Image 1 (cartoon, rainbow, N blue to C red):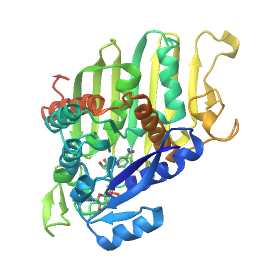
Image 2: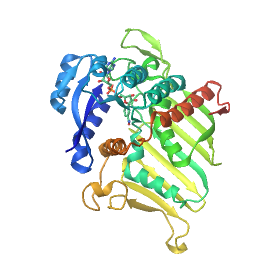
Image 3: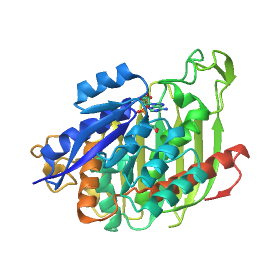
Image 4: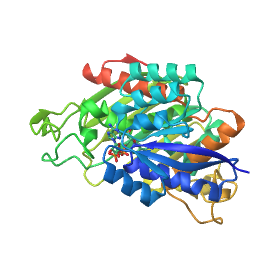
Length: 378
Ligand SMILES: NC(=O)c1ccc[n+]([C@@H]2O[C@H](COP(=O)([O-])OP(=O)(O)OC[C@H]3O[C@@H](n4cnc5c(N)ncnc54)[C@H](O)[C@@H]3O)[C@@H](O)[C@H]2O)c1
């Protein structure tokens, strides 16, 4: 008999959809003891939350997230709200003994993140943070290749996350859908929103970051605020570039912006080692680019590996070799790994503690940028 894991979802926007999709599909593709049950979803708009519950098959709705925490029939709380609510919901859920799956970034800043980690570890509840790109099969394979030593000594780590959706100066800030432009809801701009993904993957693939030097810019200085109706200063970073040193001696270069006309969500990473290099691109996420210096000279060159075969990460659970999967599957993989982890009584990385490391790098980046690129220790 499968064990039921009753999910209480808080927030039903973009991420509410990706996670609900993952809970619904995971047991069709992965053999696991635990089966998620879409028990309850909460949101402030009763009509909106009812429509979402009907569409995705949630058994019940709540208009206040605190009711989800109070309910005895909820095992795991899934936090899909804007960043300023993560801490309060996570700490309340931990105190109620619920498992927690929290969206990234973990928190608004390191201080909040530390409070969250303390609460979660005191409660001893299972937890994970949705840095989902780790679980794109090609990225997981990059991790395997690095851990196997195939790149040798690593010299460089490079990552970009480029978008263009805020170039219009008439776009307001704040409220539903535009909370990302409001520092009070988001904490920071591209640093916490986009670079946090790049940093999480980098820490996972290449180890700790020791120092950073950063620059940020806010290209549009004032925007109408949806909650006050007034023109207000924009306090988030629209763009951020930083370079850094890793604990293994390699150098890192990171760039993120919402002002790269033509780019919608271009996350790319490249790692250059002594023996080999690899590259990955979210727009071609089922491929890993690989260059191996030990290949015979005449044939040496970049190969484009279509990561879709049964011996490549996660792929034996999907279709037949040669048929690729996509973005939504990264979330399905995270749910699968979370369910397996609780089955085995193991952590499901990135845990809150792992995600706190990303938070520390983000804080060091923002603090360096305030001083026009001064060196900051992480
Ligand atoms: N892992 C990823 O790749 C990824 C991608 C996008 C967003 N995110 C993260 O997910 C979180 C949500 O982002 P999103 O894109 O889904 O945002 P969204 O705006 O699409 O959805 C946010 C949801 O939170 C709800 N909400 C807002 N205030 C609330 C409150 N007081 N009580 C209850 N619900 C409330 C909104 O009604 C909405 O349903 C953010 O932390 C974001 O950084 C992660």
